[in-house]
Length: 412
Length: 91
Image (cartoon, rainbow over all chains, first blue to last red; front, top):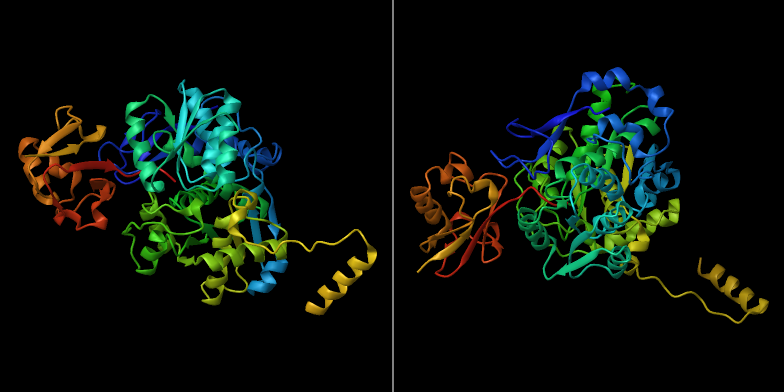
């Protein structure tokens, strides 16, 4: 039941067999999974997909596994929510939230990529897994490795939020806090992947791992009635997710599963304190100048994004745009989403809401564009980002409550 | 009198399997040129035809990306450590 031919270099086209490999050995560019789309189109239809359970494996022919998955079976299948109240505040009429803050098992979109990577590690018979992570991937790899019975070595920057550390260590993973930023951690992890015979999910399993992100795009299209959105706003760290959403939409188009051709404009969101991709887009360039991150959006704090070039190029090609948000704007974005739609997103979600607001104000997204905002992680992971007033404290007496209500009423 | 240069696996065919090679101090550009003499084809593996680094190759001098320094004109002092890293991981 496998439809993956092998791996293919995104830049020079050189082909590789299916194995743990980081990138093209000729030109060093990333590798893409290459499928037999003709064979897939013979077996995959809307009806076949719709009849399957609501998780990412309903698109299994378009994922690079060669055996039945054994972990991450409940990942994906997250809600697409119509966001009229948020839309009214932002000034657009046709707005949706794709809510991966409730993904399974660890409340971020990384559960999609991890589901593919850990199953792939099992297929390859690797004895352990690892990753470099800004937090969400750490949680996800630790949880899935535990479920798969694999030891996990998780490398994180030493300034990570406490909840993200707890939600990694609890699974029994070996967590190593590296003194430095994510880019230092990632460089170390790249070196380690050459020395240890393990599966580092975002290094030597990356060509497979990244494919999990396509399911974010498949689900959006299916949930919109087999239609691609007009605009999508996606947070960018390494830049992979936005490119894989696009790949996913184009694959559905190629397979004849969509009502219309894909004309989705891609919009990328970063924090102003770590904006190597958005600044390239604003210079009308795809040349990435690395930065030293300084932002509360730690999950997006990658100063040297591996897919920055590809993301910037695709944003330009689809006639999209990119912008970034300050720490204050990020917090305001988190609160706005929570207060209008009842969704508590982590800092990356605040970035995406704040940038969507800017893009609408700049008329880069128009009032009648069918727009999807990608919410990729849960606010309970980064509660320290939002400093809220302590609750009002009273004695258990009706009179005291009455006084509070009249006082609150007076302040409205 | 030398600097140490770490070579990633993908380039070790050129360096006859050496994972660390030595070079004399100079700018990064000069060091690449001198290594190209010892290891034929070294420069063309990591640089474009016009001489700039390939897109997915990064060079670090004592842990700092040369794009934060003076790019290929960055001076490398005696005793420093250089690393060539293929930059397609992470995120």
